[in-house]
Image 1 (cartoon, rainbow, N blue to C red):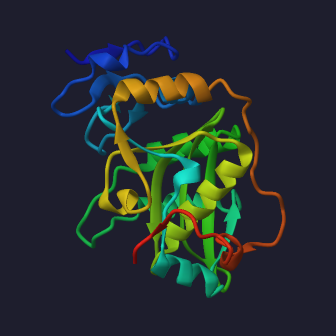
Image 2 (image 1 turned 90 degrees about the vertical axis):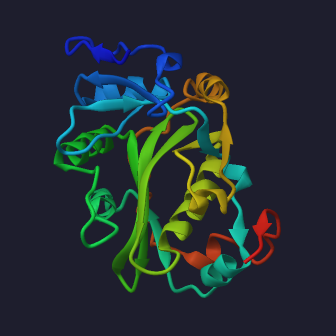
Length: 250
């Protein structure tokens, strides 16, 4: 049975093990998208996902797709693109631009789950220093990026977009290299895609994922803006020539 969330208790969620097998991971309905509820959901391996005509739906699929920051795989073709120095990258420089870029339908007649109240919810998390963006630029124009939520040493990826070839991949590589430098332990990718698997993402049992969250979410938070005010980082500095590990075939 799907749990109905108490609108007056923003910290209470059912155990993720109660999620349905079909549809995979559906756990609860209702509640709100307040920053407090969202933070408590992510800490428990739960995230919201619903369409404009649906009530708020909460999910915790099994298995879970994750990416370990130090295991990011970069194909030879992507390494060549990084070294051409045509793209540059920033953090938290244009969160609104990234989330609105992610909200655009992938196809002309397609829809989006990033409806206005979802966008507003993540913008509120960003204002609290918990949601972050990676921006990819070409000649001063935003051409791709991704955003997600950071709690302790865990990063929960939400969405990415590209307006030029490989822009979202460049964003993901930069994110993982940065998170690895900062001591983050895991990136939650939620659901499996071939795109993510090609870059090193793997599926693990939900129970193992929850164990990882219990370990990493209690690490010190890197809360606040990740924008250091420095000039955008050139793509050829993201993956140096000397970097030879974790290289995937083109």
